[in-house]
Length: 308
Image 1 (cartoon, rainbow, N blue to C red):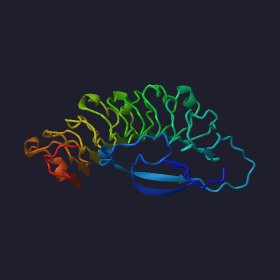
Image 2: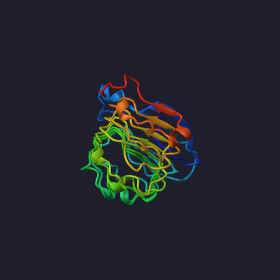
Image 3: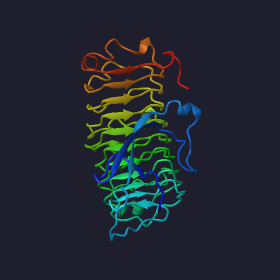
Image 4: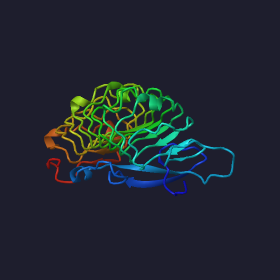
């Protein structure tokens, strides 16, 4: 396939591949037909995130032949790009040595567990911008992916987060779905987990279990903007560096809500229902204030203005 196109959006790359960093805002407007888009009101609060662009080296001469699904691009290093080719079914002829797989910007509605189970080397799985529902993504879909580090499921139609995810995960992106519930083991018991993106969903307080990060104390980035939260989540990971809670329904932040977050450097609280009565003199004192909170953002509009 003699096309020069981006192969994968990933965070972990084999050393044989070139890496380019592109800073961009998440946008549902890219990809082929079949991807759904956010409303203008939702788009106003889309979070930014780093996007790493993976391009394969030009293939050199050699006797190795790679079995590759039709219209996909494959490398000998195990990188497979089936993005943006109007797929409606999971490709069944993927190379077993696949370790980075992109199926983004397609029209997938369901994935059967057996379709992923044989890809035991998979480290990165990009499924963003499809039509996946919770019914079409069984709880056991990922249980055999014991090497999975990066999982991208943004811009789908999920209402419930998968109950069981591999404990090898480093980064998970469920942004811009319709999630109403997170289970205890969705993100719990994952000592390697570093970043979780949950913005632009429909999460209320009841949808977040108190033990959401039990056994996952190394999470550094948690993005919960543009949901329906009225309270700051409890028992946040102590390693948290970046916490985004903007565009929710927070009315009050109790004393000590951030007292255990000595590493917190970036806290976004704008576009909530916060007033002076909702903040205590000790809300950010002593630990957060004295140990280096670098960016505290309360508002981009008048403090008492309700979120859109």
